[in-house]
Amino acid sequence: MDRLNKNDTIASPDNEDPARDSAACNAKRRQILDGAEAIFLESGYEGASMSQIACRAGVSKGTLYNHFENKAALFGAVIEDLSRGKLAPAICQSHLTAMTCEESATKLAERFITVLLQPGPLRLYRIIVSEAPHFPVLADTFWRHGFGRTLKTMTDWIGHWVERGDIVTDDPLFAAEQFMALCQTRLVQRKRFELPVDCSEEQIHDVARRVGKAFMAINGRPS
Image (cartoon, rainbow, N blue to C red):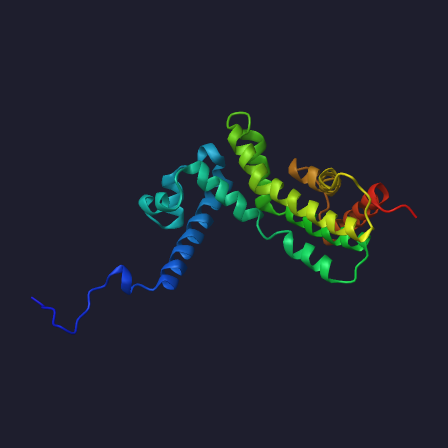
């Protein structure tokens, strides 16, 4: 039997590297979210099980529950993950460049429409619509972590242009909802219903340009 000598050390929490442990935890969480996203989009919320998700993610159910209390919490995290970072880069860029307000609105609309037309968000939207009557909490989760976050970001963007005097509104939140509704015309709604529609980059840009003009016609500073 091997024996310890006076120069040996025993691994303990004090000897662990917090940065390494944090990185490992984040990597495992990423692994779980990727597996959960795949299962939820394939099977819907009700059809997905924690066992399926653990299997797809390549982790034990114990590890899964160490990171997420239940399926609802995991679903909320997946929605938040899908939503995070989709729109912010375009908005930050619009603040830092010498764009006009209409050019900024067009660029933002183009980015938003492109995100909404991606397979993941489309399938996620269909899941929520089909299962919300039976699981109202799903719609609330989707709103808080998905559209609600985007709406907050859009409201901040509008506030930026209100301060500059390019947009005139006493209700930036309502103006943000107008903008988001305009972005879902022509292409997004048809695609959600699997209707034939040309979603080429040229069409997306054309719709975004129309959204920018329409939004400024409603909320732009009078000439």
